[in-house]
Image (cartoon, rainbow over all chains, first blue to last red; front, side, top):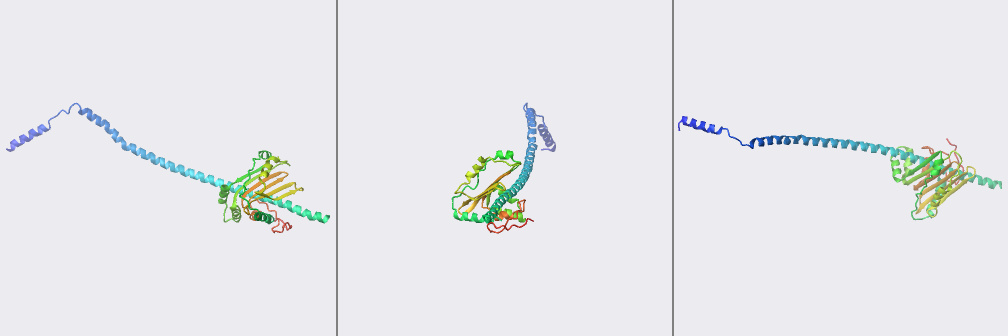
Length: 120
Length: 189
């Protein structure tokens, strides 16, 4: 085949390949449908990120609340302990006071008894 | 000072062997007394609260250490004390409810003293289980004060005495020896 014939053949094949072809009536709706569908796929990563963010926030908030509750519990425990200590000291004071009262009464009776005997 | 009580306690402990008695008394509300009192003391310390209080006693402090040692064997301290502005005749019904619980053989009356001069009446009872005193009850009536103390557990009266003059526990300079009443008072400092 001569070079001229080769060029003509190539040109004819290119022309045939580049010839406009009607894609059909369903092409445009299909493309539009895919375009419409793509943004939905594109939104997934931001939603997942938001969920992760909320989870992190929730976890951090839980830790803060737990720390605050523990602190509150500790303060209350200290207050209860101090109050228990105060009541213990008061209870021992009252007990000793009444034992002393009994002792005084016994002592008074014992002192009075010899006096009565000596007076008799 | 309280050695004069230790002898009778030991004697009772040695002679009485009983099943575990309920050393904890059921104390009435005493609402009538509380309503008429100018000052009320209502203390209920069970084992848990005693343990909590012990945790707030500083072992390096001698007074706190003595208190910690004293309450080591205790299971509860219950105090009801009412002070009145004028001489007051206590309704005996509620007091009788307490006295009924202090019956033999679980409880033994250790001491009953009546002072006509001071118009005071003090009863001291001890609860003994298998030779060991495991409870103490004091009922003290004075013209303007009525007090019930119930201590559950083994209490060392000598250790209690060591606290005298501390924590507001009155220091009365009473005899220290076991002389059965010999008056060897020391002047209060």
